Image 1 (cartoon, helix red, strand yellow):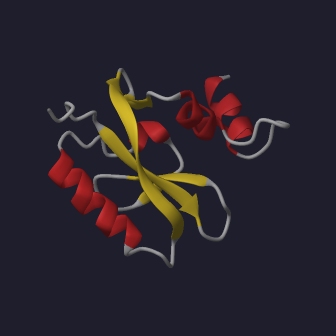
Image 2 (tube, one colour; image 1 turned 90 degrees about the horizontal axis):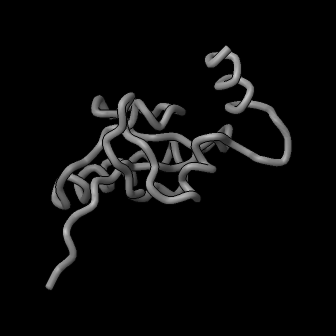
Amino acid sequence: MPRAFTPKVVTANALLEGDVVYLTKQGHWTRLHAEADLIEDQATADIRLLEAQALAHEVVGPYLADAIAGENGPEPVHFREAFRTRGPSNYAHGKQTDLTEQEA
């Protein structure tokens, strides 16, 4: 018996900067998980992943990550993806400082 589909987002790393990025509904890359396209069915997820893989001049290693609908957009399910939304954890820089400034 097949498992029920879990909603997904397409994620990858930006080719030049290495930042974690997410595919939006409009087909652009964003660094904010909450702006990602939350995909609700397997067929659409497969198509969106193929679209992302065709953007090899922009990103590296696109894949589907489980997500759930949150109050402000998709939210990661797995802790690994939650870490990726915040950027490197060894010291505050890049995305971490940007998010801290937005929250202040």
